[in-house]
Image (cartoon, rainbow, N blue to C red; front, side):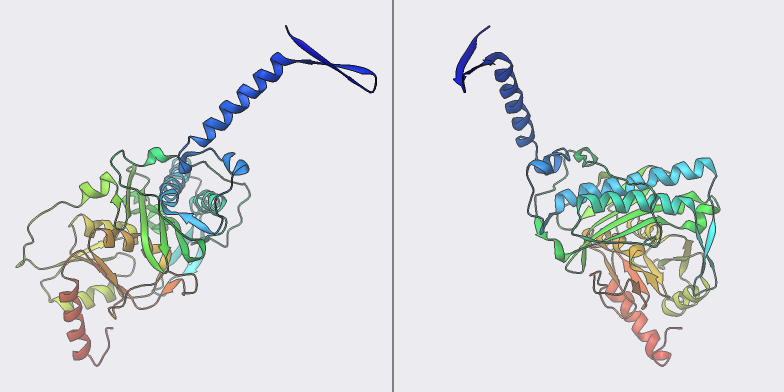
Length: 358
């Protein structure tokens, strides 16, 4: 063992070189470990060593976080469903007079989803359906890039944090959740940039499938497989999906616009209904009353990624910026094809009824 000594104030200081050398080697290994991680895959502690520009947001990183948030929220929903301890209470009634319930699953999913996202993106504005709920526990997670399939085309794209708005629906179709109609239940995250939806995630907790899309880049294998290529049957009457909780107005309007031969598919949950359009089980999704943007933003992004369209019944794109109202009051029509044709039929109906739809 080798030692060195020096004189300092008449005292001899002896330094053991072996432990010092070992410490230096270990420190070097740790630094190399952190520096060689992909930016989105580095452990959370890396942020303490090197901070990215806090005013910029990496959309690849945000896609990964959105998928994780939806899936983790889904686990909370499953846990409450299995326990049957819903702790249900009412938030009031919808405009259609239907009870709007809240359960422990809504609150737990909200806390996991929003807190997890906010920890990673502290400067991004995030809106959740259950923002009024107080989260007793702190929730966080590190980014896990394995939620993306190997062939996903997800480039590193950064945007200004102030241009990003995130919309979270911790549990879509809560009423059906309390009725154990679990096929309608989803958890959703949407990322909007400059008011337009660019990333949409719809996770179905009870079948374990996650449909996600990043407009212009990539989509989940599940979503790609859900949308089969087929020849359009132009002579067949349209199939319009409408809400099972307030169908009277939508049914009457659908028959008025498309004729009595129209087929109606009643369903619950905005996310579920969008996926019915994606899967070609429905030609269009029609909603005739107001609807919250956390219900529709993820579906809007997914339809856009597939070449589809979602607009208000006034044929206007829906904007999801932070300065916009969280409520879309003008109804919606969502399609993969024939959107202009259907809007023309709607316009003719409106003209024939003195400018009114209801």
